[in-house]
Image (cartoon, rainbow, N blue to C red; front, side):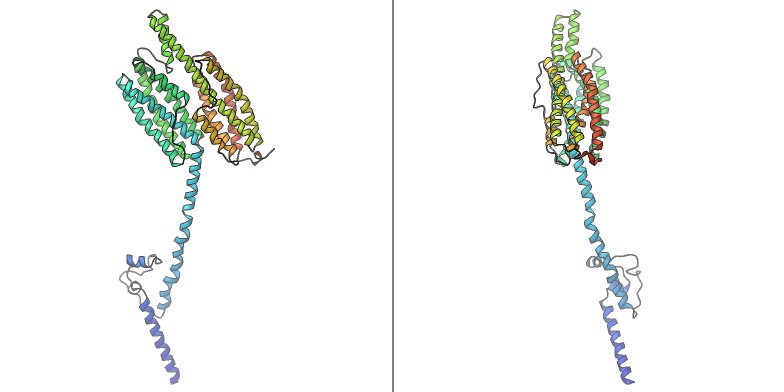
Amino acid sequence: MRMYETTSGRRLLSGAAGLTLVLAAAPAGLLHGQTPTAQDSANKPWVVDRGGTWGQPGTTPQPTTTTPSSTATPTSTTTPTATTPTTTTPTTPAPTTTASAQASSQIVADSAYIREAASLNMLEVRLGSMASGRASNPAVKSYGRQMVTDHRNLGQQWTQLAAQNGLPTSVTLNSLQQAEVDSIQRLSRSDFDRAYMNAMVADHNRTVATLGRINAGARSAEVKRMATAGIAAVQSHLSQAQQLATQVNAGGGVAVNPGSQGNQNGNNGNNGNNGNNGNNGNNGNNQGNRADGLYAQNVAYGHIMEVRLAQMAQKQSQSKQVRQFASQMESDFSQWQQRWTNLASRHGNVQVNPNMGPLHREKIERLQKANKKNFDRVYLDIVKENLGSVVPYLQKEGRAAKSGDIRNAAEEELPIVRARLSAAERLDRQVGKDKSLSNND
């Protein structure tokens, strides 16, 4: 009996000693019901306050024989929660990175649109700078300064977008844009205001249409957004230009095509107002003739590009339908390219350089860099971009040409271009959806 009591007493003493050790090892906050300090949390990152884990302030937990198991609870139950941030953190950036890469890829696919929009803004900066120095009317001079500021800002947004996505940021004017700058620059100071404001009406009308086409055809949401924002700004510029054009043309109009001013003066000379005006009319006719030649030259450049793209597609496309489409494109545009080349030579002896301009060459280089998997999609995208701009170019500028043969050519080719554009759009919708388009010889 004594031996049993002694052993039991030792066991009780041993249990009491163990309880004392556990309580001594427990955090002070657990023992005294205090809220953990920032230092406590910093030292023990596994501790999470879930509203009651630490006890209510001002209360003291009663030490019982169950304390050892309860003190082990924070360690055992909260430890898994420490792994939750660690395991979920690496997976969080993945969707963002993927989405960012996809957005950048779409912007790169829209690189031709970005360059086109940037060149439109450069044109307005060049002409606006000219107007701010040469205009006689203070309102026209002020408008020119506004165009420099606004279009420089708009242009920088496009070039910054290009730079952020690893695209070239250099901007150049195409041959027609440069011809417009040269024509207006040659005008006398007395004719400048009217010619400049009429050019602003025509240019901003074209820009609204171009940005609308970019918005409709772009893959990138950012490119679409910038095109939409640009339309709003350009429409405001157009409204101002229309009002100023009415004011400065009150005494007689100067057409957008600078050569038409000489034609008007020539008519005055023929009516006997003065002989010098008749000579000016001949000069104007020559200028107008050359303007038509430059127009035909630019159309021919676009056709040369389409022929070369089609030749590449016939060799490299993985789709029988795409190769057939490219063959038809080569046939059609080879014939029309020759016709426009002859028209350019006939009007102002304008020569067509087979090397084309930088924008056309860039599109060819873009297709050359396309990999085998994406070749068909890139080819059809370029065709859609180009033909989408050719339709309004034939419809508006072509019909407005001074020369009847230029107008006839534009009118006759317009339905062909529309048909090829529709075919490219249909084919593009099939590519990527119908796997039978690949290797289906």
